[in-house]
Structures are given as C-alpha cells and as structure tokens.
Image 1 (spheres, rainbow, N blue to C red):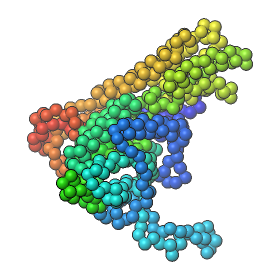
Image 2: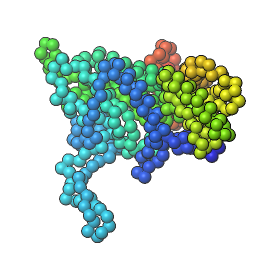
Image 3: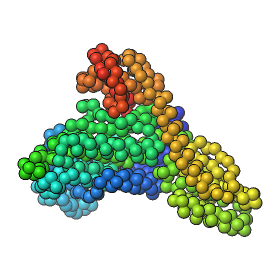
Image 4: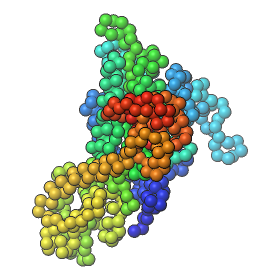
Length: 491
C-alpha cells in the first residue's frame, strides 16, 4: 500500500495526523495555524451539516448570518465574556494597504487606521445581541430561535488539524426567551439534539452533563456538554449548550414588553458544534488501516470495483453493475462504480479501505458466471459472497448493521475504560496506566478541581445528568460529596 500510516500503538498523535492527511480529509495551509479542508473531508462535514441543520429546523430554529467583524467596544460590555476570549482575539487595526516606497511590495498604510478596532469573530454573542435589540420589542417577538453557520477565529499557536486551528467552521445557535424556564428548556433541548446526532449519526456514545464553574463558557450561568472518549483514553468535548441568563440582554439592553406591558430583559442561550467533530469521528472509530466511517456520514457508502483482463469482460460487468447501481441509488444509498482502468484493483481496495468506505463490492468473470458479488465490510474487515438477486436490500441492511456495530464497539470500549475511583493516589496511577473516564467524588470547590488539574492534567469533563445520588467523600480532601463526576485527560 502506497499510503502507509504510523500505527496507533507507536504514536497515536502521528497516526491521527497521518490519517487526516493521507485519507485526503485536510492539510495544513500556507497560513500558519489554519487548514485546508479537502473535498473528501468537506463532503463528510456537509453530511454533518445537513443532518444537524434538519434537526435544528425540526425544533423551530431558522438560519441567519451576522458580520465577521465585531467592534471592540462590544466586547467591553460583558466583562466575563471578554476576559474569556481576550487572549484568542485577532484584531483589525487598519483598512488599507499601499505600495512600499522602497519598492518592496505592499505595506500597511499608516494613515488608514480605523477609528475603532474590529475583532475577527471568535464567537458571535456580542454582535448578535446588539442586533436583537432592534428585533425584540414585545413578548410577541419571542422566542427568537436563530442559528448561524459560519467560520470563527481563535488565535492558536499549537495547532492540530480539525481539533485545534486558528480558524474553524461551526454553527452557533443564539436564542432569546421570555422566561428563565423557557431558556433552560432550550439549553437542555439543544444538548439533546447534539447527543442524538453524536450517537445516531456519528455512532459515538457521549456522556451528557453540566460543566463545573471552572469549565463554563465565558459569560454563561450554566454550560451543558456532551463528552466522548477517544481510543487513546482521552476525552473530547463534542458540543456545548449554554444558559446565559440575562447577562447579554442587560449588557446590550435587550428588553421586551410582557403581556402586562411591563419591560423585562430577555433570557438567552447559545449552543454550538464545530469541525472538531471531524477529529472526533476519526479518533473514535478508525484503525491502523485507515478511516472507519459510520455509513450515515460516509460520502461513499458503497464502492464497486470490477476485476477483469479483457475489454469484453468489463462490458459484461458494466451491464450487471449499472443495474445494481440504479437499484442502490433508488434506496438512497450513495454508490461509486470505479471502473477507471488507470489503477489496479488492489490499489483501489487499499485506497477505499484507507478512506473508510463502509461496503466494498468486487465482481470478476467468475462472479458473472455464478451471479454473485464479493461483499467486504470496512468496520470488521470481513468478506462474504452474496447472490446478485436482492443484493440491494441486503446491502441496505448491511449498512444499518455496520452503523449499529460501530456504535456498539465504541460503547463497549468506553465501558471498559470507565472506572470508579475513591483514592486519589490510585486515581493518579490509573490515569497513566489505563486512561479513560474516571467516576470520582469531588467536594465541589474550584480549589480542589484546580489542584487535581495542576497535579494530573485531568479535568472535570462534566457532572453527568444521569449521575445517581451517592453519599461519599472527595478523593482529595475527604469532604462530603453527594454524587460522582467524570474526570479525564482531554484534548
């Protein structure tokens, strides 16, 4: 195989980087810290977008678009928010270039300084809430349920494709409500949407829960999260939903007249997922042979490769395959018939294996005679021979089985890597030896959380929604605790 991957055991980080590049998902760009998402990678992101966008619209949300540039003064209106993003902001200070008098290309025109600097969007709460002030006057204007698909910039010097780049793609929902209860319900609903997408589309089990105060989004009263476990035993935050209270409404004076005619500040939420999900998809399922893609997100669900020596053999194969392709497409299955004669079948098999195509069909002269196809599934590398008759329905069932099997494998892995620990020294030892999710008692203080983070690099990933009440003692301080939280090292 021409495209060799570093094994996960040898170097998980290098394996990931090799796979993203060699499977044609993305590559580093000429702009430091930024990436180019290649067509195959973008096709997966498009399927993610389409599924999520449909789910957003089913819950009553509409798409809009807001400016990339945000006046610096807007960030000064919400103190916690600006403090959370200040170190990551890219700032526009001038609006014009001019030719260098020394003939060395172009320079920034010193006479073209902006009266007020503009921040390149790191997130859109401030620009959106300044807009909502004009859109909301009365309770009749509420709830306002808006989503935006956009790019954002958060200045990063240590980058990794999809997981951490200076510019990335995402969606961000921003909603306004008449009551606190409605806003909290929205926060919970959208977390549920993310969990459903992660589990049913990405085949990636997640833990839903609340972030600790230390880990909350800047400016939020509560942050809810879905946390997934990668194959190297590290957690990946895969989506967040924030209850913002009235902080942004008060900062931008967004009020509405209630049914009694009294002015009140609205209640707010925001929620988002990003192209980081692409990294999660790679790390949750793939192996040393390449990508393993859940069929629901695979750009090509079925590839068919002909094996032949003579042109007349290909003609006969084409006739049979074209009929099958039409039937598969009729069932809504994305299929590629690769009868390009520039590459040998062995090269094609390796290439589609690397790219994670869930099902590969092969047909040669003997299969023609027998009325069969060789059917190979990518997730477990198994092969079997199936008759052409009714094959399209068997393929459809096989894709469903692959989707379910990939999820079960990830869930079984997470179960095997989830450990209850009560002793801090044991916790530190198992972090190094085993990794994964650790269910531990914690005294609820930021000081203890910070101590654990500094000593072990593990953080509280979330306080699970389904965590049962359980009397215990904090593993560090011995102070009382009424439930376990999830600790892990993370990306």
